[in-house]
Length: 93
Image (cartoon, rainbow, N blue to C red; front, side, top):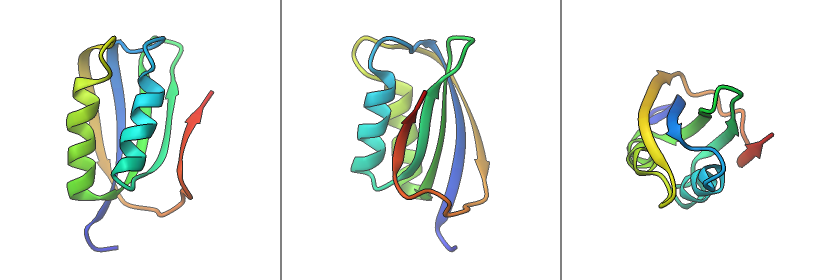
């Protein structure tokens, strides 16, 4: 689909227990992105998001900042092919 893309993101730092997942979901929904976010056992947060490339870049800027209580130390991003598999943006457990 032209102009659509997908990102697979891992966020490292103090990003669990600081409303990071709720923050991510809110930003994604504001930008019209679809996908999911979840905590990972190693203390990081994993995100898969799909949408317009421009909106994904805005989303990444917000993720790099994080919510006020978070300390984002590192963000790894892989750009992937858009699949259109998601109906909305979910917080996964």
